[in-house]
Image 1 (cartoon, helix red, strand yellow):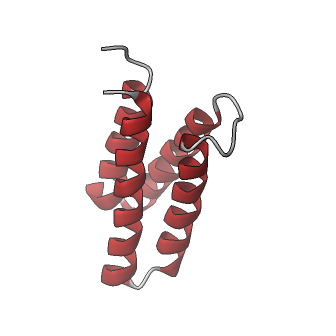
Image 2 (cartoon, helix red, strand yellow):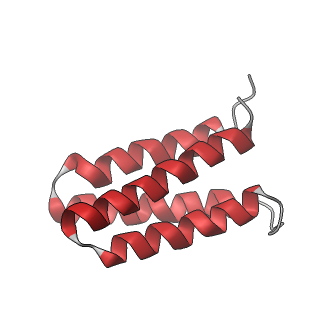
Length: 97
């Protein structure tokens, strides 16, 4: 798997999570935040934004945000699951198969 494909899959999961958060909890913040981060990651992945390691920095920021959310709610879903997905994306992007 190449790093670009891994990031596209993560972007899809991020958008899906924002939509689910909006539908289930009427959370506009979830929808907006996921859309903004997914949009930035998509621009990076498409080569429109070419700042070295920016995708990794954004993934790191998301891990922090999801960790803070998990600490606040003490519920694995959805923050804990997104920590796992984000960490996996970050690690898999740097593994060479």
